[in-house]
Image (cartoon, rainbow, N blue to C red; front, side, top):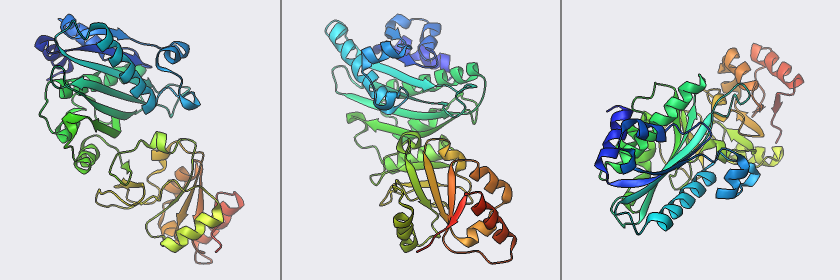
Length: 359
């Protein structure tokens, strides 16, 4: 089904009634329902609190003045759903829902901030408790109009998967999210399924589905198997990371020596997707340099521990790209003297891009 067909199916069913609140990239989701016809069966209200002062007055201020974050999305869902119940809860015999999104689109000024949160709070039966589905996505570079179109399609897919398929497994909902979105235009790194409708949702199965159908190279999980958004998890945090080849005792020494706050130990090798004892990045990256794009500018500083063997095996082009980010390499032990890798180490030490770990 096309996005227009999905919006038309929801409108014609007339089983759900609710509000749309969209911030950042325009009202790209709501417009599909008006274009499909019979929007009065579905749409109670659409709005866009684009101005920050208006947004804070309606949904409250956020820490660090962030407007594209999970807390803002949850505030939007909670506020709009309460308004829906207060104003028409006793007069409309329908299953209620609220759709919301908050987006920072890519632009010439914001080259690294093309991402957003969107979600839906809805009833599976009239009068039943609500369930939530929340998504964090990242956008690839492209025209603003292309980004807006992709967000609109993503939102319609989410609404159709939640409102029209009560018995659909969570993994199947994930698979359908990027229907009709151009390949590579959007990647999803975080999903939340909460509420009674998703009480039996297998978080590991959900993560596998996201990794297989919607993700780029990596996902971030907590010990309970919940997906975490890297943009929020590493926001303005110093990070000490290490490859799996680095022994635990060396890593612990580095923690004390480098005096960095450890957010996560990064595992950079092909591996099965599974919850770990500490938050860890799960990736299909083939070498230690492959995650430089994953972090973008979310962290304030990153120290990466690598072994001499990994350093010597790294391609120079990949190494240059990696070091262009705010990353400092730390060798666990010296490389072989007289080799090309040794001369490269000397150069990077002089440029203050690399140091040797001293116990």
